[in-house]
Image (tube, rainbow, N blue to C red; front, side):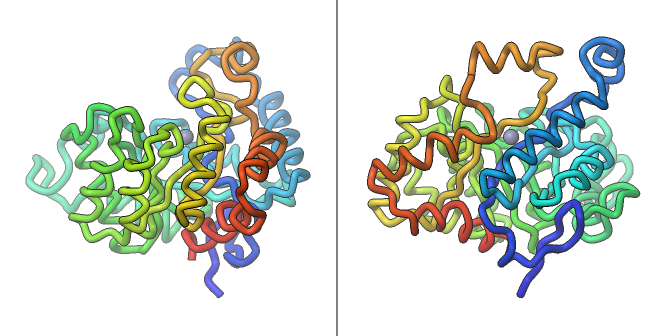
Length: 325
Ligand SMILES: [Zn+2]
């Protein structure tokens, strides 16, 4: 039986159980935090304690695994996640490697790479593969998946190089990929085309944020490539309200696509996009954008819309374990 690397070490994929496939624990900018958060709105102990409490509550709902695609650009910091994982014994946490950028290549890669001033094999691929096979920095924690972005502006030179570097790391390791996409511009199709050119096994790709769209043609075109649709922003009603998200999933289940969807919220315990006003921003703008919205509200609504218990298990348990197998 295959295993998947989690923060506490390898876990048999058959034991992943109910899995939320796209949640963050923290989204932070390290420079923002170090220069403006400390001494102001960031208290490490308070935030770690809060995360432990929220994740234990999530485990009590029956969720066994949380997939955290927080990579460079979103403030990945594994020692903090290790501390939290040690205090959340009933929840597996899977972490990722990759780069989160809507436009630009990080300057750190501008002059290094094939044909550049420092003419070396793609250094991003080398670093991603190291994260997947050796471990992230000196933590010993291995990433189990790759993450990149194709946003509204499509394949800018920076985004294209990052996505091809991710595809290269997939080719070497077989690690699955999650790509953040923009459903308004339907950038998921651009991402899948690029991965197809690079020989990526599209059954190992989750099209993140596909669930912001209710356009069944767009969604089925992507699912028909073998890719999995990330119905993963439950609670972000300003992108797509929960009743519409539910009815789109129910439609797709009726059409036989339950094996091509995964569920999540894309929320977190704390994000610094609002400075210290995270809790206020949640209450005002997205009160349901919480880890328990799916179990409290979405699953009952899906059942009422005719989605069967078997189809829910498919989306919450089986599809995630297939992705990591
Ligand atoms: Zn996310």
